[in-house]
Image (cartoon, rainbow, N blue to C red; front, side, top):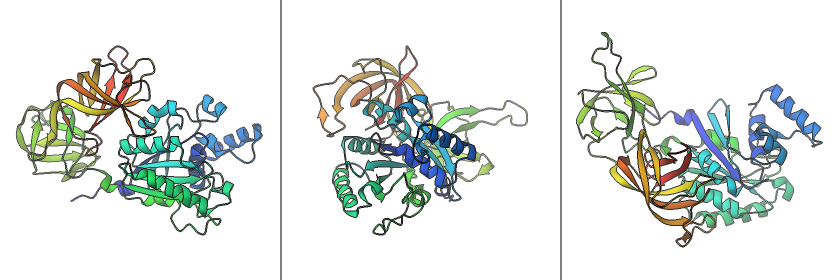
Length: 421
C-alpha cells in the first residue's frame, strides 16, 4: 500500500499570538536564517529599517505586507508565506493577534497541521494566548508548539520559562489538544529558531525549524473512513474514449484501491473501482489529499456533490446539522430563522438557522445562553436545516467532511464557517 507522502512534502502551519509577541519577527527570522529570501528583499527591508531609525534590520517587515500593517506595526490580514528546506516545503499563515481579527485567524488556521502560539516571556499566559489555544483546539489542529519568545529580555531565565510552561499546561489540560511542545526562543536574535542557542544550555529540546522539518503529520489524515466527494464528471465525448466516464475529485479520507467495493451517495448504487488515474497516470491506490479520477466497473448515475464511500462505512446523511459557527460578517448578525447558502465539500444547498443554542465565551470556555446576538468574530453553537441531505462527519473525525461555510444570498459574501459537532 502506498505511504502518505506528506511527511517529506508539504507542512502547513499558522502563527498566533498577542500584539507585539513577535510573530512577524519570528517568521522573518525563519525565512532569513533558512536562506529563503532574495537579496533584493533583504536590501529593501534594510533600507526601510534604516529610514525608520531602527537598530539592525527589522525582519518583521518581510511579512507585514500591507501599508496599514507597516504603519501600525501590527498584523491585520492573513499573510501566506512559502519557503522550503531540503527536507520539506512549508506554507505559513501569519494571522493577526487582535480580538477583532479572530475570523482571520480561523481562516488561516483551518488547513494547518501545526499551530505556533507565541508568548511574550515577560507577560506569560494572557487572555489572547488562551483564545488562540481554544481556537486551535476547536479547529482540531493536530500539533501545538508554544514558542516562549523574547527570552533575551529575561536573561534567558529557565525559571521564567518553566513557570509559563506549567501555567499553559494546566490550561491546555481542559482543551482537546493531543500534542503540545514548548520551545524557548528569541526571534530577534535567532535563539533556537533555526540554530541552537548558546545562551540556553539548560534547554535540551529541538530548534523550531528542526521540529517543523521532522514533526510526523502523515497520521493527521483520516485513513479509516473512505470519503471521495465528486467534484467533476469527465466525459471526453470522442471515439477514442467513447465509453470513458471518470469521477474527479480530492480524496477526503481513507484509502481507495482498485478492486474495492464502493457505494455512491445519495443513490446507494454499488460498484467496484475499475481504475484510479492520478497526475502521473494509472495508480493502484489513492490517499488524502490526492486529487484523482476514479473509474467504476458499472455505469451508474453520479454527479457533482455526490460522494463515493465504502458500503460498511458511510457518513451521516442528514438535513439537520449541529455546528460551531465562527461568524465573519461585519455588517449583520447571525439571524435566527435566517436563510443562507450552505457549502459542504462539493455540495451546495440553502439552509435556515433553526436554533442558536449558546454563544461561547472564548476566554472562559463558558456557554452564554442569555446573550444570543452573534456578531462578527463570535463563536456559537447553532442548529441548521438544509434544503437537501448532506453527507457529513464530525469535524473531529474529518476536517473536510466535517466543515461547512455559510454565504449571504444577497451579497455572495462568506459570512460564517462551521465545524460539525
